Length: 223
Image (cartoon, rainbow, N blue to C red; front, side, top):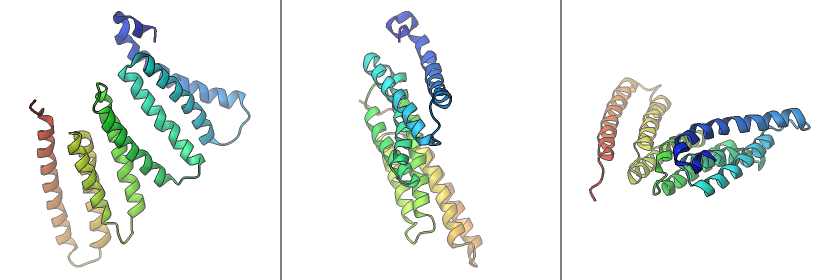
C-alpha cells in the first residue's frame, strides 16, 4: 500500500500484494490451528479466514482502486461464500451453480470498467463451475438434453462479452457433452460406429465454427 503511494514503486506493489495474499491466509489458518480450540469444522475456519481477507482487500481496493486489489477482492469473496453456503446446508451442486452464475454477472459488470483485465480468469472459473454443476444435475436424467441449452447460453454470453475464454470453455463443454450422449444412448446399439462418426463430424464442425468466431472476437469493433 505504501508502494502504491509513490509512482516510482507502483510496479513493485503487485508482486508484494500477491505475496501478502498468499501468506496472510496461510498465517491465519496456522493461528487458528495453534491457538484456537479445535472444532473440526474446516468450513467455519475458512469462512473466518477468507471473510477477514475479503474485508481487508475490499477496503484496500476502495482506497487505491488498483486492478490487482479488485482481483483479490473478488477471489476472496468467492472463497468466503463457498464455506458460508456449506455452513448454511446448501448442497455442493447448487453452491457451484450459484457461484458460477454470479461470477458471470460480476464479470459482465467488471468487463465495462478499466479493470477488465481480470475478467478472463473469473470467466474461466465461472464457466467451468456452471457446466460442471449442470452435468451433475442433469447427468442420467430424462431431460439431460438441457445440457446443450446451457452450453448454448454460455456461447451467447461469450459473444455478448466478446470473450474467447468463455467461448473456449463452452465449446470444450459441448464436446464433452457430445461424448456423454454418445456413450449414454448409442453404446449398446447397432448404429454405435455410425453415431461415433457423426459425433466426430459434429466436433470438427463445432471446433471450426469456434475458431472462426474466436477470430471475429479478436478483431476490435469499429468506433
